[in-house]
Image 1: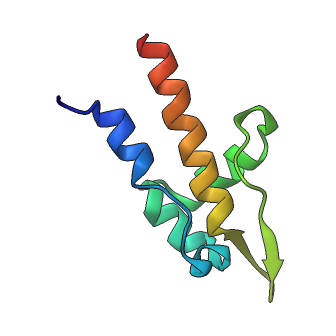
Image 2: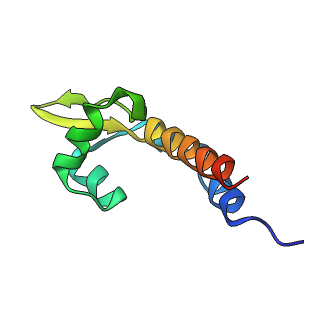
Length: 84
């Protein structure tokens, strides 16, 4: 039986590594999603997107990796529901 690509992607996002609780800078977050830094600011301005809020560390914005992974899971679930 062939697995649905959406299910496969969701299973690859399991949070099992304690390193997932680390904070990563917005520069790396932007690279993760292949977007410009200004896009992250736009997403922050739209709370309905549910994008994880930034944490200021040393005058720079960072995001918790585990929160980003959870947001990705929710996006995958929404996409799967839309395909149904």
